Image (cartoon, rainbow over all chains, first blue to last red; front, side, top):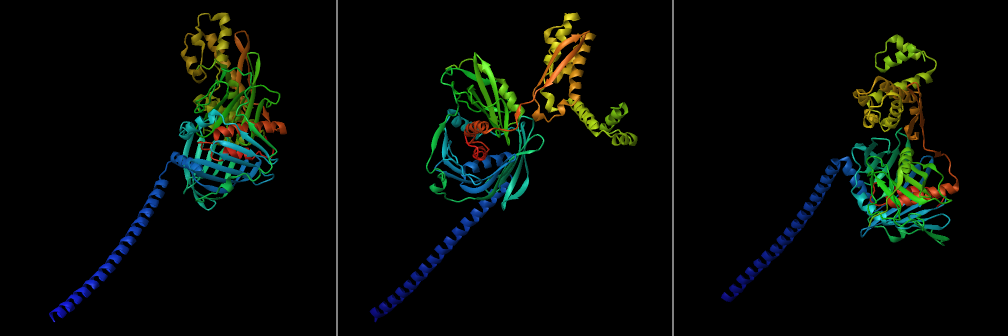
Length: 359
Length: 203
């Protein structure tokens, strides 16, 4: 009996143990479930809090910080969209696909009006595919990489521009921050920028002259931010059977160009900085920027096909060509950039030959 | 323009015009003349207050120096060259401070400056500033101690139209310029969009 009792007792103990174990498992399951839910809630809550903080931070960004955010978005966001680009009376509709992957920017611009032309960019390499299936590629100049690193942290100075937040607006169903960048003198243009509040991407911009006339307008009509962009989207559609493929030199330096001949701009508008720091002899191109606008100065031996002297303008871009006689040789100086014609002329006419480059 | 009308305009500018003066201005038929005078008065006021950035850069020191040089040939042998260099931004104050000038030199200086401003008043600086060229000023003659100045305003020569070849050359420079501007700038897509928008002409 004892044994029975013992067995019964034991079996009861066993039962109660099993029940307890079962209950314990249940409690364990419940606890782990509760713990999981709590963790998820906490994660959700913290993400909401961080999103809210980010929104609050965004609301308190200064105009300069918005410019930095815009620059980061232009390079490091994946986006595709359609935009209208107007330069004076010329209007074009284009599509863009931009990808940032493994530290490399890739971009494809496609003309949607008239004959189809495309521009493919990988990093700083640019390839233009023209409607006649002519491919033009720009030779990489040593200035572009050094210029890029200097440009990266070069902010427009408050003494040259009045940079301010003009308010909140709405473009293509997205909330935007509108920035006003007003030139403080006549050597640069003014801008109005509409930045996507969520990403910082530039959704619309206008460039205005001193009289407030609009010289250039860029405006998205549709944009999306996909997580992933496949390689095919970045390939030229128009390339097909390429008729001609030419590599355009960054500067048409004459072979007989004296090796150590150097030129300099005698006058630089206030606030502009020479950004091609690694400038070497024989490559007579100079690039200047004030943090927003930039212009390039080319000095070349005069050829028959040189641009006619004077100013040629398309929208906000001016190209001023000036011929100069130096040391029994005729040179052509071309200033091109988004600057007023008067400023371009003064720069071009101030360019002069200086002493040879010293190693 | 009638002297009284000018006075009325001046009073209006100073917010001191009475009803009669206002009516005189409003009833004048030649509105262009009034506009020109109104613009000139504003320009002069800006210059005197040194708040006109459009003409701040104009350097008249060479003109004034040349005027003094020319005048010196007659009767101002003791004035140093350094004293004669008058910077455009400080021209009035320094002219006043230069007490060593004799009256004739001061007259010549005043005449030169007055002449230059008179040229502006006649409307040349009413052009949009972007279309103006650098001011090239020079004195070329003198008679009886007073200077006769010539001044020319040079504007950038603008090509209103471009031939296909000209447009291609423009595009080539545009492409090279874009190559320098694409990375790291705040221009975003703009440099390439500018190139793409001229695709119809080609390169």
